[in-house]
Image (cartoon, rainbow, N blue to C red; front, side, top):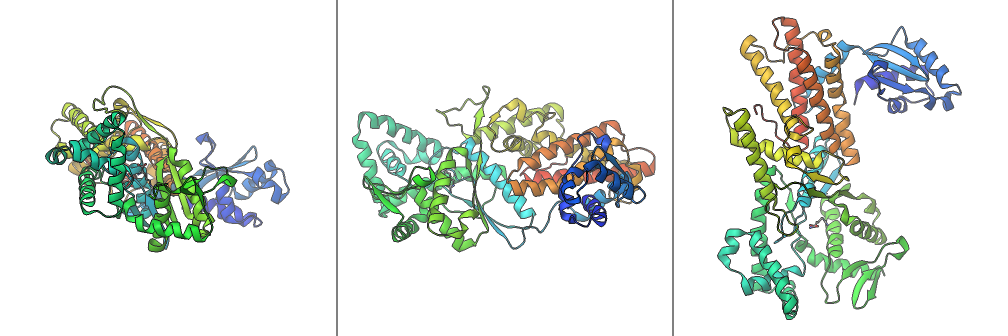
Length: 572
Ligand code: ARG
């Protein structure tokens, strides 16, 4: 993936054929102090095989490589048992810029996933409930994982596993019939449905018989009663209308919207199969799978009243997906509060004898909390996500109006940057960490934010435009790579060189923040170069070399932003 590392590994392997080149390449590290070199090989890891002290190994290898360093390197040195390699600046510039150009917007893409299918279950909000910040995080992480896997050649199937079934629909129907108004629901959508649902719970405290009515309505629904079905379908449509607005704003697309209700009949088959395989036990009228042996509470399969449960439908969905999509991996993106739920039913799949149980992967993420007073629409604990996004767009528009009032396409750019701020905020730290949302941090154009990366990309585009206007060249012609030897240019080039590896790691670790963190590094390196070295200079050769670097950097920033779901406007 990194041609320079491969060159080191091959050169060293030619001297120590006892260790395969692949192993040697995997040993390479980046020294903490760049003055030591660009890569280093810790030789203590070789002492066992070679039966020599690390310092002796490093010394001998350095001596052997001194006159003929690996291709692309200018210096090899032994320091304290490490073998350090320094890149030749011209080779670095020439290789990186050429690869970025040749890839034409797909720098970092690969075919490692070819022939493999990954199902990603993400977003999955609940019908007639608020789409909350936890669902946003699932959406953003899931979409980034989908993009990254596609980029690496996997066949990706994105599924929105809508929470569209359960006893709460009995309550919703009762509440609507008693206190609801068709026009209000049409007008206010999910907000009105939630209001009715909350009212149901308030009323039920004084009138517990409402609970029985709700159960009766749900039974009707499960039996396919036309009126109950019609109301339910209407709630689904109303909710989807609202969810789709959010997906449009975020630029998110699914291959399938298949809610839990899709799996009801299949859930019955699951119950039968569990029974046949002797896995079901009865517990006070309910059916469960005991998991004591694995130190987990039992998985609930069928309730006392015969209704299927969240576990049952997840098991049915997994069997359906395996059969239909023949996945090699099926990924579930949810809050870590569901760790136990997934551990339980993954175990059930294993107990059912399916050898692919290990292909089911839960990708948990931390909680999102909100800070400051910007969120005026708090309703209980719910925050209306469309409000958050709309506020982000509005605030961004205000910033643009202040800093760049003449910008064409202002509204669209405000949407791209405002939404980008919210998305990036969710991806800025490793997913398992809890995140705090603060307007000030998320929209800060100088902080480690989405807008900062977008702004850096736009800055690069503006340099290229200026060069084209003044000199007629735009960064894609011939150039002398030896002119890109300054420390700042090298640092930027090295970040670009590392980009494909970062994308690959993000896929392996199911961690999109590896890409977002790297984009911050790239943007910072770019800005350091930009502040240190004038680009659109009179000197033809120098200008062309610098423009080649700027153009390649802009391309990598844009590719990276797209992978995590952000647009890259050319002017901000
Ligand atoms: N609807 C669930 C929730 O809001 C998330 C569903 C996740 N996917 C799954 N297959 N269980 O908590």
